[in-house]
Length: 234
Ligand SMILES: [Zn+2]
Image (tube, rainbow, N blue to C red; front, top):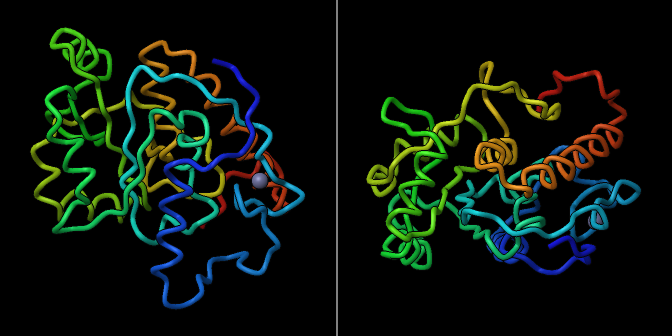
C-alpha cells in the first residue's frame, strides 16, 4: 500500500492526547516556545505531515513509552505509528500495572510477543518470525521507548516483561543526530524497528527509513544544525 498520507489520528496521537490531559504542569522541553505543527510536533516550517506514506508490516508493534517520552518532539517511536498505523499500538509504561489492553495483547494465543532488547538469550528477528509462522501466530514486538537509562529501568522494574522472549538486532551505527547514544551500537526506537523490518526483508523498512531521514534532516535544520554534526545531546 503506497497511499499518500493525510494526517489522521493514530495510536500515538491518542496516547499523547491522554498524556496531555494527565499533565499537571506545562511540559518545558527544549524548544517549548516554538510554534509547532499540532500533528507532527515539528516547528511549523519543518512540518513532516505530508512526508509519510502508510504501509503494511509483517509484524505488529507495541510502543511502551516512558511518560516523559510521550511529550518529547524528538521522540522517534511515534514515526512507526505514522507509517504503520494499522500495525502499531502505543501505551504508557507503568511499573506495576500494565494497561489492560496491553495485557490482552500479551495473553493473546494468536500472538508471539517478544521484547526488542539485548540479552544473552536474545534471538534474531528471522528466527522469531519463523517460529511465529510455524505456529500460525502473529509476531508482535514491544519497543521500550524512552532514553536508554529509562528503557533499562523499565525493563528491570517490570517483572511482567521478563516472561517475554527477547529480540536482539545485529550491531549497527545510529544515525540519529538529536540524541546521544548511550554507547556505540545503541539505536533510536525507530532505527530498531527499521533494523527488524530490514532483516525480515519487508518493503516497509525503506519507507520508514526514508521518513526517518526527512524527520532527522528537518529537525536538525530547525535547530540550525548542519547534517554532518552528529553529537547533539537532548
Ligand atoms: Zn506536521
